[in-house]
Length: 133
Image 1: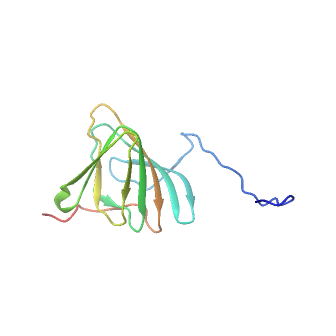
Image 2: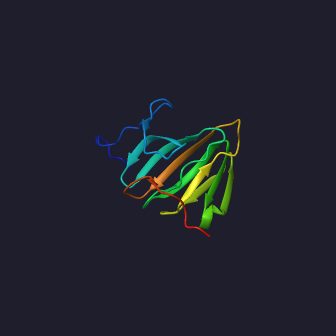
Image 3: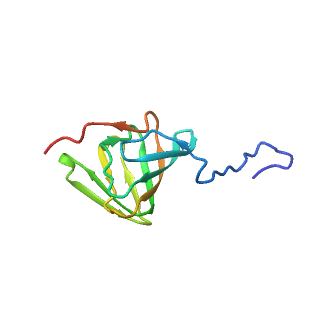
């Protein structure tokens, strides 16, 4: 509870959809930074219709996501054979160092994802691919 006369309360911040800053990206994914705090980052990610991102991981970060629009297909695991489909309105979690790529299976609709990253270090590490089968 705040005491009367205590003026140290923080100010609520807001950003419009066109006020985000460029964030580290992966081929075929456009990421924009909304907010950064101690150990957490909020990012919007957009993937064009039919796009398949490059292989990457998020270092020491846990990535918690919400698919705002479209359909998202994750490929991970040996040879990229582990598949997870997330539909619009769905949530997902990517653990640290999980090599994966993002696929937009629609050839007509883009996808928009809101990401909450918890951790530290490099947000995106682009790699050649997962281990082979």
